[in-house]
Length: 274
Image 1: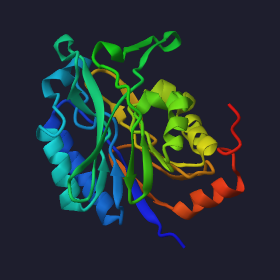
Image 2: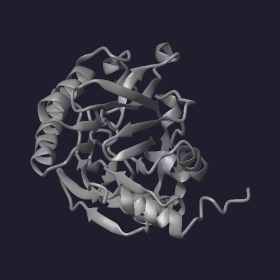
Image 3: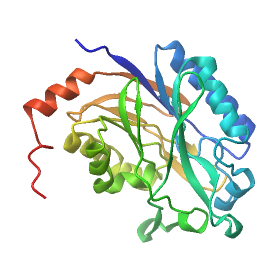
């Protein structure tokens, strides 16, 4: 019988002061560790939700350098947790234009960086009925590498927020061996109410994989309101844990044997023809 591994999704209402956000993240990571978790996933933009998208330039870091990454490495070691770090502003080739990577570094329980994923799909949309317009490409630069990493909870396929709407990315991650997806997000209230639960459950069901999806929640300095409702979903599409409002963590057990059993008995991945 395979060992159950407990994982957490950290829900936050991040603001414009990095130190305060890191302090809150540390508290919630400590709570997850005390809950028996071996892995925790932070939300998108956990360290900064500024007044403007290009505020991220002021705190952008090079891989392996900077106070946000120092905090993450120290927190992973201090709490004995693997941390999937939501997204952190990283220097990009377009930094002079005010555009950064939205990067998701992963740390092991000793504080060593094991992987970095850079958000591929940027949220450029107009929601005319709600008079909302977003242009993530004005302040962000897209990554182009599909990234997965081995952890105590299995091989994790790394994604960020808007990536959720592109199932071809998840299929590439499954082909690379992923059994768990992480989807740190800052979903708007409008799109969250309409699609958050449905899309997360769909990605779990069609790939027979766990999904850990922590979100930003509440109102932020740029006037945006985020949906929250952080979720952990099992490979059959069942919601194992869901956050209520506010700063919190949710947790559930990841069962590798369940993934193997479902993929063997219901071989949808093996039955693909296209």
